[in-house]
Length: 113
Image (cartoon, rainbow, N blue to C red; front, side):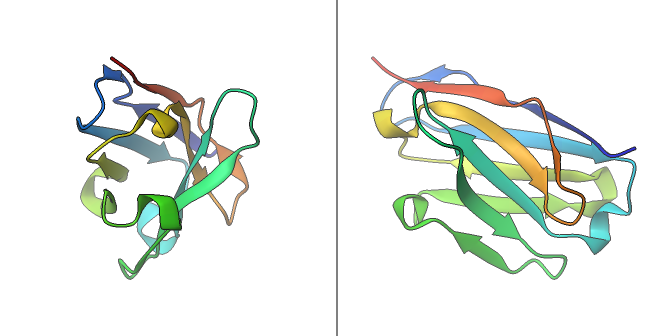
């Protein structure tokens, strides 16, 4: 079955950087779009970024120019490079495969002094 395992979340100061990883298994990774979502405390889960099988990328307006989604098909892994982090980026970040409706367990990102 489809499995997604996120990692890389941490406590970081405002202005700092983190790289999240999501290792996928159970499907032909290179053939499918991959997506990152996030859920902040007390808020609904929201879409962050998507990368297509052809490496085209889309971003939520609030993260454009700061976040970069990428994929390494040989490693069945999708990444989210997050730069210039802000307190409002604090959330649990989830990996998602739209075609299968499958979610990972999430990784916590906290941006705070």
